[in-house]
Length: 299
Image (cartoon, rainbow, N blue to C red; front, side, top):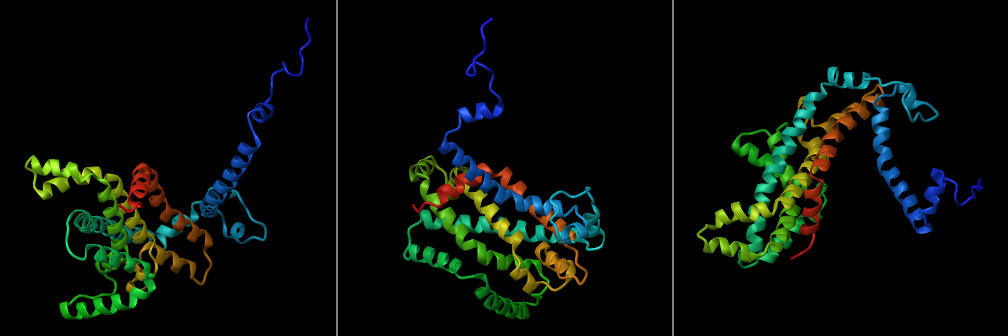
């Protein structure tokens, strides 16, 4: 019987992997591993900490895996802190902000991309310049302006989610308008001209031709504005005083600053707050990539 040489014997997994792995592939895989670990580990630590006890979180040695899946933090979050009310408040702010922003920015972006009028470029660039100012510089004039309007009309600025939506639009509309204007410029005008020749009005062209072709950009704007309104902290802290009107970021800050430390409850609230954004990104990933890639190129 012929003897089996070293080259002819079956290779194990390590040897098989080494035969197909070059130094370039190895370095790329190593860099990718550390990148994914740096991105995913904080999420894992947040979720795992929500199931830990206070002793496991505050101990001298880190506990990477909780000893058991304890739901005490989530039960306390909903039974004692009434966190479901804060979740509802965040939805009541984020959803209208994203919808109103996409409607207003669509009309303004289409006008700047297709219509010809004096000062069009100046207006568009001026709107974008507003976005360059940090939000903390705008909060005082916005609050003073809204307070005077509220005194004249008869509404209260404090603890008013509608007013909070308005302040978020001041932050999200400039960049949303700029993104959509650049995307509309990538759509050939000949398509719209053909629809006009066929008898469509300008509004019908927008509704039946332009908007269906702009779904990736519209989805990108919706996700972007929703994420800003969902995570915003500073404006909500200034305009909301009633605990029942708090959005989730303000409520998490309240739990964090409680005299009795509750880090596991904070982690549970942070996990709940993160889940909708992750689901939204994963569901709309294809549209988001296309919209940002096209909208980021100036036409």
